[in-house]
Image 1 (cartoon, rainbow, N blue to C red):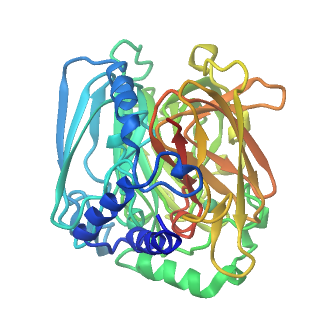
Image 2: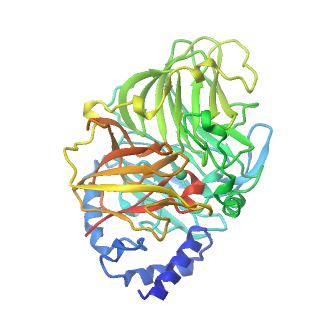
Image 3: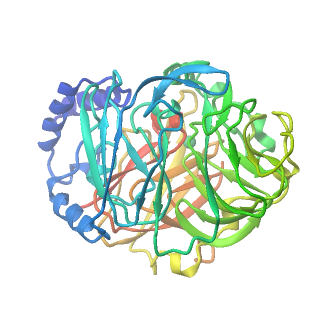
Length: 501
Ligand SMILES: [Cu+2]
């Protein structure tokens, strides 16, 4: 590419990320990128995955477990009208409900999910947390976005049990009703619980307040100057978020009309928490109960009792509670934002507390990432690094522009060779926390003494702090690595984790 071509490409790529690129232009873009010489990805963000990785990607897929069973589903992202509990809003959804319908499969099953795009703009389905084949990831550049009116069938094996979720990876579409839970079961694992409750947390604006696009435009107009320090007393340090939302919803319901989960007293309930928000960490607690944390981001942790849990965008936590007798509020406090969402657990007679009730558990022992560690059998087989990568998390002084080693798409991708052991250090040079997410892999948090903490695909990095993780380069492809704050990612806090070839 000439310099002028590159500039043009970067401009069209920015447009593409804003979700307004026509399908024809997408084809032209792909055609252009195939002319890029191998290795060109070392200095610029990739436009496509090189053909030389096709065989390694196929081989990695073949090496995954395969049961021979296929689980099919159809998603039709489209404009919908949903009732948040007396508050009826127009938004976008995968179905007529928010969250969208559960997709569930066993380890080794093949998912075959057809997405029929009934939006007036491109979209995708990203399988958050799944170590899947690169060309089914539902994110550029490995998977082309699906143009308005188009359709695509995602086909891939699911290798690991756990709590995952699905959302678009285009523009700010995530900050609508486009999300659903994805649960992978291991039939060989002992189910140490009686019943299960999937709890999706979300900060809600679409159809009520400003649209996600308007929020992004306003943030860009306002620059960094408008950032608050209001959450200074929160667990997040500094600025808890960039957006004040009209509502915080749990399973698509506002606190005044909560989703109610029914169980019997004494039953052991596995609660699967998923933060599908765009700019809000939630501190969750179940009134009158302690929670035994058993998993995060799909993988087991040494079981640990807490009163509450801090969950950043994109993170998941599984807990077990033993149900009391009565009606109990499950409260998701928007960390540092002085607002909450909630649901109810009902096992007997009783009256729900008022909608803004905050159970004392919220201020008890709060589970943050440093409290958890993977048991030995779930640890990464990591010995010593072949390569040590650094991700500097940055903010521009004035403009609303975020970055990872520079702002996307002008930053350089991080690169590894297949089968390398890598460390990656997130260095947060900003005054705000960031939930950092890597596609296609889980990483192990590395403690200062070299031991492994929890296995994660999304980790909170507090302002001014660093988090070091270990990664096994065992899933070839080009993988997005980004902040899971929707607005930060759209404003440049995105890069690519690329396998060399
Ligand atoms: Cu961020």
